[in-house]
Length: 110
Image (cartoon, rainbow, N blue to C red; front, top):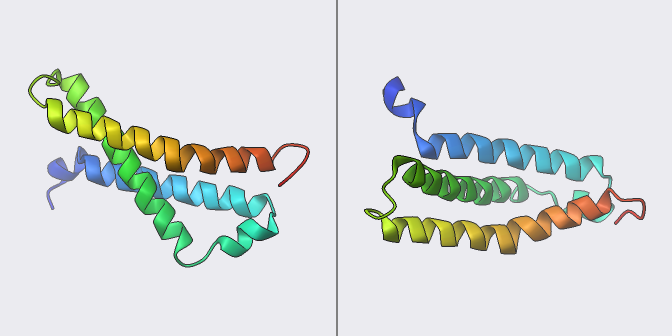
């Protein structure tokens, strides 16, 4: 693959940031020392987090790229789908997951 093509590839950037998010989240989950949470981390848990985070970041970066390019009117349908997908993932996956993790770091624990 050519460096100039990969340098600005939304998919590659979203995949790398999704991987970083998944690793940080799993690390915080282990650091929290919640027995239920650490037993739930399996061979499928981290790749699933990576996949969902990468999809979320891709949708967000795609929508931002359309807005920054000034092509919202030309690409109204893909822009709408990317915004709707990002909002749904944020509401039904990201928010509950982070709320649970943040609640565990309070004085009461999990």
